[in-house]
Image 1 (cartoon, helix red, strand yellow):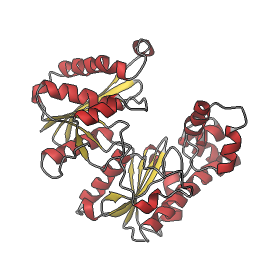
Image 2 (image 1 turned 90 degrees about the horizontal axis):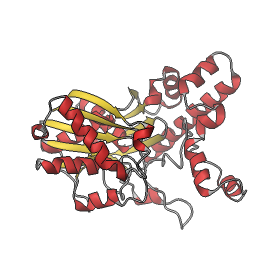
Image 3 (image 1 turned 90 degrees about the vertical axis):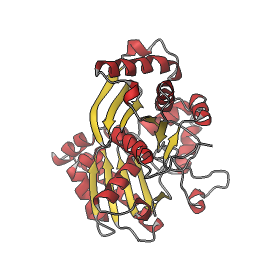
Length: 352
């Protein structure tokens, strides 16, 4: 079965063609500032980006008629169960009218329009709004606020499936913790195949290369009323200019480690603190599973750093064996999600 995968980013559109589990090619179509400057929103870029995808397929002598399905990156949607969703009118409408402007919203829209031309299914899989929380996990500590499930669901579930396959287990039987370590950090306990809790990568948990993580609440109130920040500026500070960017002026973990190894005590403190906070969150999620943890999986770009992995193992390997799947394979994850549905190994979900 041949699958077309479309993953729009802020300044690029990544495209893959898979033949079953084997990638035929993957290419990133880069969009220049000049090209994008004539559009006022990501939604307005839809036809432009779709045409670029069609031109790429033509260059590789691939016809839409060759495909069994098209799958796009899931956008900002209402809370949904994990899984692979066929793009229907309700899902399409929510992507188009999403309150949050994000390039990934174009994934399902472009997939739908291209699939519709040749009467094949269009899918999205495991968007960031995947929500399988237990009710107890939603309680925040303030009645007016509920904890939300927002996470790197695609990469977390893809690596959970990989672990299950490598260890000849059923996904639905897994009791594991998966830590996605990237520009944002999501640490999720999976119980019987369900993601039952997670730190919201934008609002809680450990600080990351760019995000603040959990902060003292009263200090945030003071900053909000200081007169120094508009709301938009403060959100940008906490999600783009915090974490390592705040401490060392860079989001590069490798650079931080090199500074620490060269004798920079401040860099060593910040590196140790990041590892400390990641490990602490993994430990917290172990309590969610009541200690019944068969493995801890480290994934995402930061987990390429051996020094970080070793620091984390020192603190958490007593809980369960630590498995490292560095990087993130979003294109393959999307293709495999569609393939599981096409081959009847998993039922497609209906977005309602």
